[in-house]
Length: 176
Image 1: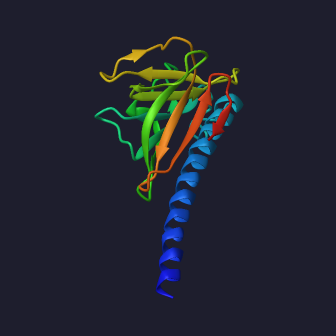
Image 2: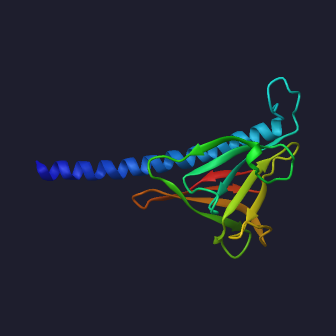
């Protein structure tokens, strides 16, 4: 009986780990699609403001001022494709011990490039369906990676499971 209970408890822990990480990946993808919908559908920035000019997006940062257990949803009010603290609409906390492990650059050739980008800001603005991607290096300097076609947010659970959310320049959002 004790052996059976041990197996059940062990498997339940793995299942919860997997479910939590899958939910996180799905939540990030959903928030990216929401940003895209708001950006291209011209959502009013503040009800009654008649300001429909903002782009909407997400910012993921592993820099010293960022966090691997949260990401930001923002309205790019000054249209510079870069998240600034004054533009934050919501800071989304990652729960259950899951975290952002890495930010990778998806390239058209040569494979994904990980461990070089420490921040990526993704935004969407009408009339384009495409994602606007701003990458930052270890020093916090913005740069344009060669052959870049998207960003991949690598997620990890406390148990070592991994999932990722890819956001491509063409506007496609996918979870792996």
